[in-house]
Image (cartoon, rainbow, N blue to C red; front, side, top):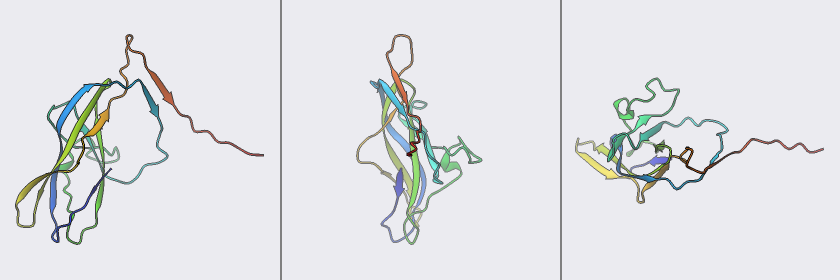
Length: 154
């Protein structure tokens, strides 16, 4: 989850958030625990396909209910924090291929009220995306799926 706030007294306009400094390696993950969500939150989302264009990736609209699902997020939206605007939240998901682990940073491009263009790295430590264990005849893996259980007391 990415919370966007600005301490600027005037509004800034975020025109792009890219995944940059992408470095991928083989995953050492041997098990995946699947815990399905109880419900969906109405938060706009960005998904980054980290291995499509190594080095930098544009965020795509990840909400399946969005009419422009899969298209680049900032072709359709801008974000305007600062001034009297409320903080905004985005769900951010880095997507790595199965059997890989990718580290990446997020870099925002924004304009000030005067029209000046700026860029800023948004995270202090690299973000990590795991593609899960590689499935294949030579690999050992375990996948654990938790089932929802109801206990009834008498």
